[in-house]
Amino acid sequence: MGWMVIGIALATIVLTVSFIGLRHFKHRVLAITVIILLLLIYLSFSGVARHYEIQIDGPAGLFQATKAYFSWIGHAFTNFKELTGDAVNLFFSSNVTQKVKNLSQGITSEVMKV
Image (cartoon, rainbow, N blue to C red; front, side):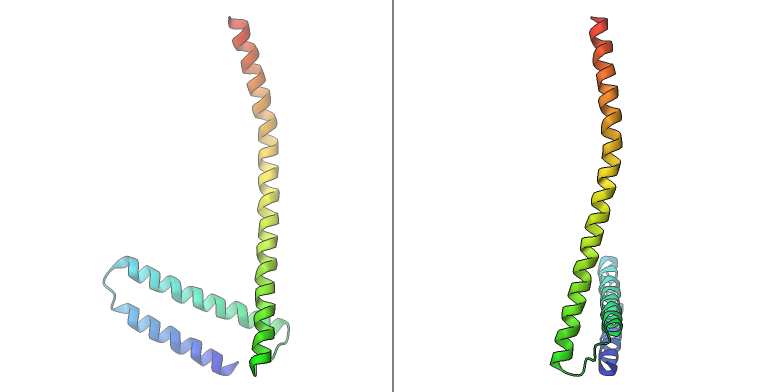
C-alpha cells in the first residue's frame, strides 16, 4: 500500500505542475477536477481495502480489493437510486392529489360559467 501512496502522490504532483502552465480557465478547472477525482477514488479505494482488511501485496489482493470496491460502489448507487425514487414518489404523490382537486374544481367552475 505504501508504493501506491507514493505513486498517487507523484502522479498528483506531476499533474498539478503540468496543468499550472495552462492558459485557459476551463482547462485549469478540468485539471483540478481530474486531480480531485483521482484523490477521491484513491481515498475511497484505500478505505474499502482497510475496512475489509485486504492486503494488496500482489495480483490476488489487488483483484480482491477491486472486487470489493466495485461492490461497494454498486451498493452506493443502489441506495442512492432507492432514496431518490422514494423521494420522487413522496413528492409527486402529494402534489398529484392536490392538482386533481384543483383541476376538478376548475372544471366545475368553468361549466357553471357557461
